[in-house]
Image (cartoon, rainbow, N blue to C red; front, side, top):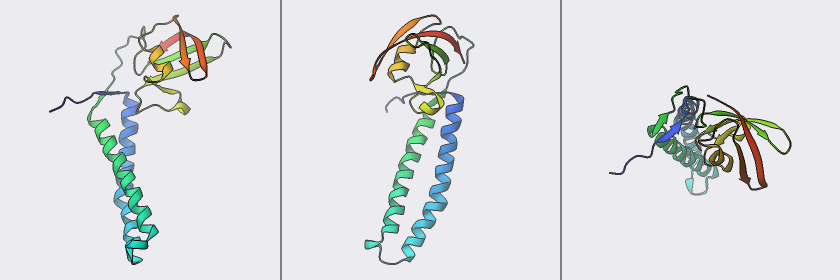
Amino acid sequence: MTKKEVIYLTKEGYESLKKELETLRKKLMYEIAERIKEARELGDLSENSEYDEAKNEQGKIDSRIKQLEEILNNAEIIEDNGDNSIIRIGSKVLLENLENKEKLEIRLVNTHEANIFENKISVDSPIGKALLDRHVNEELIVRAPSGNIKYKILAITK
């Protein structure tokens, strides 16, 4: 028996993935099942593109459901221990780009929660790796595909 890999998630991330799982299960049970049923009623399945598309979508959704179930089964929700002195998964971090003085607020999260549009940055990304275990007022260089960027950590919150 192999030891399960713990996946650290924020409470918000856990709830979001749980909601996605519930939505996909409903979609698979009702919408896709109905599309397959309707496509079968069209007759010959060997040249039935509606049937093929519905079965293909069913497979994709089923695969995502299994992935989400595994993530949620192995998840451990990160508790806020009140220590804002060090950057951990779940920390909100205010950074200043030392070249252009722009400020950036991000939240460091697990890869499964990452969403660039919500400023949720994966701990496995270049900036995530550079920030982990750092403190306020530290300066760091992030090696990004576009080149090196120098930041200063202004604040850490949860």
